[in-house]
Image (cartoon, rainbow, N blue to C red):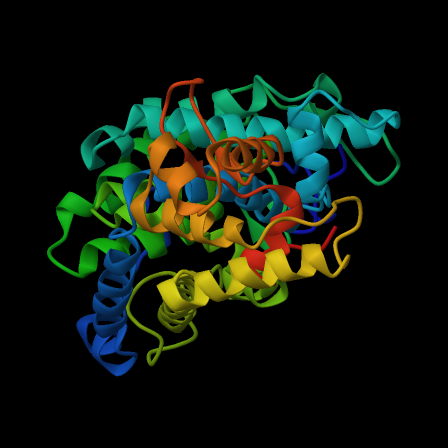
Length: 420
């Protein structure tokens, strides 16, 4: 693959100057904003708001939250890969999950890349890392390995603008070449072996107190990009790592809201602030570290604002009265023939779907009763809802759960992703 926009076409192997000393964590000081900067930008208040608002989402019934998180895994893959130039849309990703791939080899490979990203997310959920286990060399290499092991070999080939292969990505291994990313010369590859454990120790949230734990995670997101430990995939690994870290410090609803969506929607700003945080200190008024204090402050502020915005977006959508209204709007659209390929659906479906959302699960007799129809007619309606993905089941005898099929997504979650 060609180097993506975040890493820019300026990224290339370069020789290590003889006068460059071994890189240590001192090279990317300051680690987090100073107390004065925290106060000036209200960063700690923003952490409090993020934590409180996110906790409200955690109150959604577990089964409904699982359905949303499963759906959002595709959305997260879409937006995180979009930042890197992969424009495979959610409906194309879901088709690939069903085994329906594009006949175009290049598009097929990008679909496989998107699926690989989802598999890493699922793997991270199963690992359920605590902070100390997450912030280890073994784990961060495992995230990269899990991702790159599952993508086509063609996407492991790094090519220059002339189309010549200049490097090969080895899953889970630190890069072996010196590189430049934009104006930033990443640390020499031979320094990574000692530098990465230092980085993970510095940014382990357990090294900080209270609200500074989340601030450290946001700052680590940039510093990991600055280190550029892998030949490729650093952006996606960084976002996966940040999501896992936010969850590890107790913000449990991170799977319901999607940080990558906010980063992708302000992609130019995201990349610009990443670059500005690379700058060396701009004089005595820009902190005492080697890198720009204001650059790090502004990046951290942006990350917190973006996270809060995404939590607010999902919170507003999932308010009970709002979700009920949109479910009924979806049913009305079906009955007005405004959804192509699908026929009418009985209005009683709305009561069943809303109940499934609110309660997390519905026993089958209760679902039939909610329709207010004779049993045989009710069974036919429930069967239709299952067939169309509006209700889900784990077995023929299991309770019924709320589902989010493609044809309902834009009605349930307006502007979540591009319309099909």
